[in-house]
Every structure is written in structure tokens, then in C-alpha cells.
Image (cartoon, rainbow, N blue to C red; front, side, top):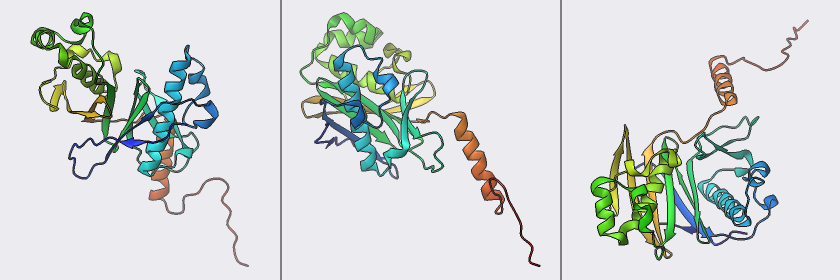
Length: 255
């Protein structure tokens, strides 16, 4: 099993809001050991490496949510149209509370998970500090002055790589957000990045031999289904009508 969960010290100094970033080594797992993994999704993986990475990431997510104080036996993982994940209550679950937004990643034998309070989105990406980014992909990552800077400072390519992927995840768009449209003041470990109407706060740290990038933004990190709206309306009806009931209602008059 994935064990030895380590908390990554990422500080955004957001008063009143909570963030948790963790990492753990990837290990051999069976599907039965990971309740937040879906058999249909795991069956689509072509390689054993991808299967192990996925299961390890989902188990680490389970552990992080437990640390957060959430009963994971009631949860499932959903994905939006861009494959961005979110946690949600299983269909038919009456219990509802705000759940954190999530991000999952893995690289070179380690899994990464990040959680943040509802109302925010988060993205995490990590790569070994020793990893070299080929100059052949620089023009896929950047353009204009940023590309020139990258070509003149190839030693900073890894931070560009993880930073842009963290922002893509926080935007919940993945590669549907062109990395060349994410312009990063890479000289700083901390930065605020404006994309459209959104502001992304970015942090880079070195931890456990990895460069880890974490990005956050205000936004919705939950993927709803029609049942969610039905339950919301039901709760509203119950709150507005104290004698509201479900099913057969009988009245017995005293004789």
C-alpha cells in the first residue's frame, strides 16, 4: 500500500481557508484496496505503470481526505469534460457537506495530492529536480519574450513546466488551456498570474528532491449531477415547511 504520507509545506497565507498538499511513494496495489478507484476507468489503462500510478494517487487522495476530516466511504471521484477530477457524494447519499476541491499528480515513483476549501480550485504538479526538459519542447511551452527567456535560461525550464501544469489543473482545463497563454514571472517562487477573468496564485518549492508547483484560484471545483439539484430543492422544501414529509402520511384522530 501507499504509506508514509508526507505533508508538503505550501503556504498561501489565506486567512480562514485551508490547504493540504501531500505526497507519498507509489506502490503495488490491487483495485480492491482503493475504494476511490472505479473499475471501469482502471480497465482502460494500457500499461501496468499507469494503473499503479492511478491507484496510488487515488489511495493517497483517500488518505488526504481522511486527514481533512471527510468520511471517504460516502464519496466517489468524478471528472469534468476536460478530465479534471472532483470528489462528490455517491448517488443516493442524503448527507451533504461542502467538500474540498482536489488535484492529483504523479511522477517518477511518487504521487501528489492537493486539497483546498470549497469555493477555490487547486492544481499540483511535481517533477524531480534533476529532470531535464528538452529544448525541443520550449516552443510548445512559451512564446515571445518568455520563449526567449527560456532559451537563454534552460535551467529554469523545469519550473516553467511544473508551474504551467499546476495552473492548467487549477483552471480545471488541462491541455485545453494552452501553456503558451500562461505567462509566468519565473524568477520568483511566488507569483500572481492573470488569465482571462481569473487570478491564479502560484507557489514553487523544492521538497524531497522534487520541484513542486501549486496553483490556486477562486472557482468551482465540484462537478454536479442532476441529483444534486434535486436534493438541494428537497432540503429547501423541508426547511421551509416544518411538517413536510416523504411517503404516506396518515393522521389518527382521538375518539
